[in-house]
Length: 334
Image 1 (spheres, rainbow, N blue to C red):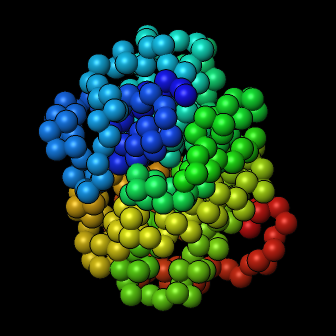
Image 2 (cartoon, helix red, strand yellow; image 1 turned 45 degrees about the vertical axis):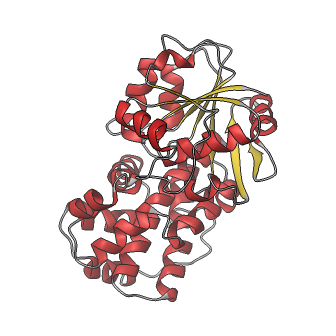
């Protein structure tokens, strides 16, 4: 049994809290939004994010971030644009013995750093790991069998997370490639948003299969340039997370993309759906690819649709009419 605090009362944070509580851990969930805490206490659920899922009364709810004190594990369930702010607030209370586990997926605006890089800057004395993979909150919370992966710079820390969080509905694998796991988990949101655009345009299975296949290729291309390992992108944080996010209606990225494909403006689509990590990540990944000189045509065309006013149908045509390539380019650079 572990003492665990989860920072963030969003869908995935609550889902992990319910899963960990059911597995016998002492769980605290923190939110900066007192109205969310009050709603959960009053109704036993958070209807806006996990309707119909009961939040166990044994889970402690807190709005004071000092609740990270004296914990075995702190799990970061904060949307990527707000991760640094929350980590900086928690840093004065967290102890060096505490393992910090990041679940946020994205790149930080401006610095273009991964979320684990941000967390390491905020918690320099702590072991930091990533927990990622195909894991819709709606299913984790309901005990639907889910498999996920953790990675850290210290394999013993990864084994600790694996042994602590694994149970009969939540299986955790260990990977040593932190960068690969983060890039796969973050950029799959970009491809999922593009997949939703294709669905909104009424395109078919052929199109989505091509988009996903070439999408994982360009994700890997950027990842390898950043020091990741190729095999990681064939695993849970790569193709696994890509499949679930591109194909499920649980995916906010896909749903927002569908609206855009149907003619809704990108800004309005995001407003309707809520947190759409792929929207911000598209801009940041596009900037990073240009900075590093890595060709990422899907990301580029999606960025043009989201931020430059390009019609979605024109973006599809641009992708289809690119210069011919060899599919099996060995170095991922074309």
